[in-house]
Amino acid sequence: MSGFDIEAIRADFPALHQEVRGKKLIYLDSAATALKPKAVIEAVAQVYQRDCGNIHRAVHLPSQRATKSYENTRKQVQAFLGAAKSSEIIFTSGTTQSINMVAQCYGRPRLGAGDKVLITGLEHHSNIVPWQMVCEQTGAELIVAHIDDNGDVPLERIEEHLKAGGVRIVAFAHVSNALGTVLPAKEICAMAKSHDAISVIDGAQAVPHMAPNVADLGCDFYAFSGHKLYAPTGTGVLYGRFEVLNAMAPYQGGGDMIRSVTFEKTTYADLPNRLEAGTPNIAGVIGMGAALSYLETLDWAAVTKHEEELFQYADESLRAISGLRRIGTAAHSMGALSFFLDCAHPHDIGTIVDTEGVALRTGHHCAQPVMKAFGVPATARASLAFYNNRADVDALVASVRTVQEMFS
Amino acid sequence: MNSDLRELYQEVILDHAKAPRNFRFPEGANREAQGDNPLCGDNLTVKLIMDGDTIVDIGFQGSGCAISQAAASTMTEMVKGMKLDAVNEIFENYHAVVMGEGEINEDLLGKLAVFAGVAEFPMRVKCATLAWHTMQHAIANDGEVVTTE
Image (cartoon, rainbow over all chains, first blue to last red; front, side, top):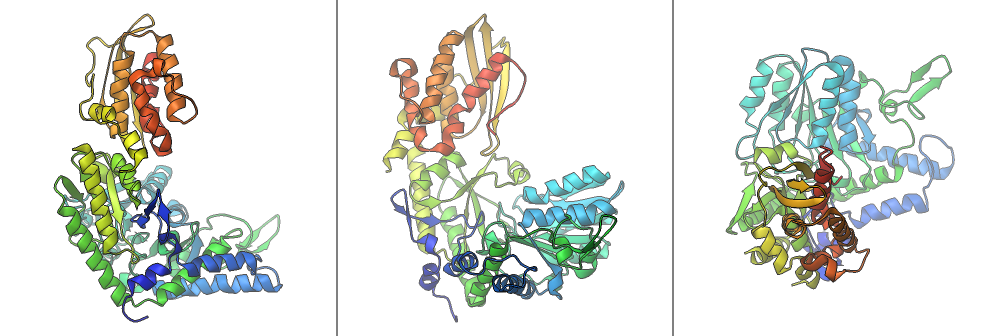
């Protein structure tokens, strides 16, 4: 498709075309989970209706079809991420599992007292807690490059920590889920590398808006979730540069990850199977393949332009509301717009706009340290995807005014 | 405006949320407890003066949404001077009503009947009950932080 036909795109997402509480649904919570295009829903249905066989096993046709589609998705993800080999792509249940795998299988055998794991102040809990756990297990120390007043992480704060020495792993969000801040991932990876630390990127909030190129970024690991990439829940990816991924211990033992098993000794399969024990989310992964195929049909230069214009429009529209405070105002932001009203608690905002059909996220967004940095218990967050339009933003603004009227 | 919403955010609730009553700790309090709702970040502390089984004075402080603040405010107004048996009887009916599992006993609930609208919003039940659970822990004085999770 050349150019950007928003109505044609909206027609591809069935969930957009419904009423909630008697009002047209305005979906502004894609950062929590993205809606799915028809193509994804149909691909999943086809697995269960026709290609319902387990993968990598049987010689019968349904199994062969499922295996082919599953492995084809791996190649699609490889292309999407610009990875050198398809064996660098591991399917997981989501970003959370991907990061836990790196912490436990790469970090745990290598970290010890005196070592440090560096994260930033804007991380989602899933890029904090796995590192805290591995630090407790190994005696390593978790250190934080804190955010500034705009919700940005100044590069010099990261560099200071690296220069102090001992940092073995640098883990950071490509895009912040709570604030929308985009971190300069390429620069951070280069800094980490020059200090002999490996880099782990939480790409959960980046991939819905761009195809990251892991070779260009120079990262060692890149994690994301399928369900934020317009694909089914329960799917995710861990990309690992072959040398580091191949050095990782298996995450789980079981079927599909072995070469041979006796009671005395088991030899493990090669990548990627070694890190994918058990029957995976076959239909989900095949659905992810359908999502990537769908995204390939879009003109991404036009999508990016639409998203940037819409983000700016939403930002300006929200800022124009008196009594509203935008939180997270880094120069480079995308996707999420957090805000706070003087007159109403975010939880009340969420309930009231919901009755207008507007789906927002309210709460701490699994990023309590971010909330603490801004001195608020919670925020309301609108998040955008390419299927949103200006009418969605206008509906949000109108519903926020309803909240203000009620609490004035 | 949506009628369920009007039912939830009644004048009494908005009034108590904007100007909570007993938003202070009674001097000489001999019971206290802290309550958190980790999902939405609400937190409050309830302190009481108990004399035998009578609540002589009660107050609270904390932050949260309109429903949780109004629930705490109306609760303190209601239970001050009451005996525990009566308080428990009120809470039993209040809890059933906000859960959508029981009829309002107007004689018992009085002003608290305005919280009946919460039943239409299951995600907000915790907001309406946090203060009550926290008060119960304070009375039991078991020192635990109450959490709605």
